[in-house]
Image (tube, each protein chain N blue to C red):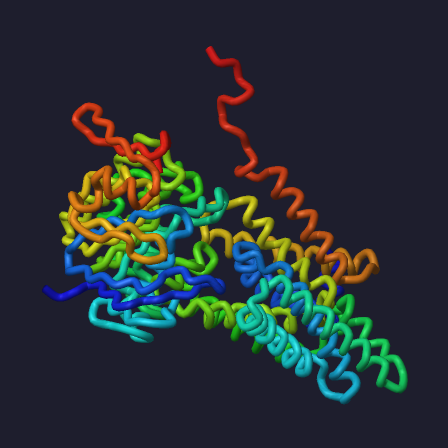
Length: 280
Length: 259
């Protein structure tokens, strides 16, 4: 307990905790759509696009979060457009841009005169290095994601449940789908500083998948997903500080442990009550 | 009488094949049209064209007074029961919630369903016999119950036109009869203009108004007596058709199998 207070007495400790709460909140909320609409690969693709953006930021000497936003939102838009215009499955479109943006990232790093060690922090996350300036950007993006998710709560639900019917009912499904990918892109940007390009996918998928194991109610899925993400972020952060191990990886491993627990305890996996008992 | 749905020389190309060719028909308000035809004959395309989800390359479609791009605007006045895909067993949505989704289009963006919509959802759930299942997980319903749910969802927005695409697909024989009867009752009670698509000719035998035989083009369109007789059907299907009567009900058998 003393160690926790000691951790929070430092400015970087408080920044890290605040950052973890922001990341946990956005990832767990958008993660519900990722799970219900099967967007896990889209999340991975957009996260890798962030790598290209971060590398460009370092090359140009601007805040990498800003260039990452441009790259992620741009990639999300291109995935949506290509899937539609080129008559390709979204998976194929993601596969294309996943590789292209990574290639650009490698190219940008090649252009840099010397390797910047901070780049490593964006790849694997360094929540203890989150600055106050990054926190402001993260908080603003979190608010934007919360507002849109709240405004289109019912539309996103219909889209996840039955996209064809949502369109037939008169909902602008193309626009809503694009908006969702755009939000996913923003969430990735919010999270890369904390958990890194590679591990952000885990926070998008694992808390919502944990919630999916535990409930059959849509609203409840958001709550459980949020609780499991926040829990993983706080516990992971403290553990990483106490054990002196990387924070991003610890958060993800804690989330993974939660998922394992939820799967074992899942009421959905419980068999019928009379099964296994003798029938009289 | 004003037409609710009107096709004039409509040709639709879908996935590089001609799905509908020179289709013309006029459906008056409150009329019931049964559409039969083999698999791949364009029946689903016909319904999607009514909804404006697929655009014709030729001809004119008018639905509730709107045509062309403006069909989008009347979509909220059309109830649609698509061909059934089973609901994901664990999808976190309850029956009442799934039915309420049918009201979203009419509510518009940002507005949430209120008391009025919930009362209407309850009412349509009762009409389809699912009032006791309102808080069950939608994916846990049986095939027949899921079809009733989709029917309730199509009705909750109080549509003027109802489109049904193989509403009995994947359900047992007894339930099939119940669903056909339910659709007929709803059509009569609500005076809904209805298009009922099926590949099973026996489902349109308790015929209400008119029947269309579709095989990319309209091969037959007329009253029940005109189309649903063994001679006409034998010509359309290209195989002998037998009429079997059992317990006062007629059944059509084509080439030893139900079509």
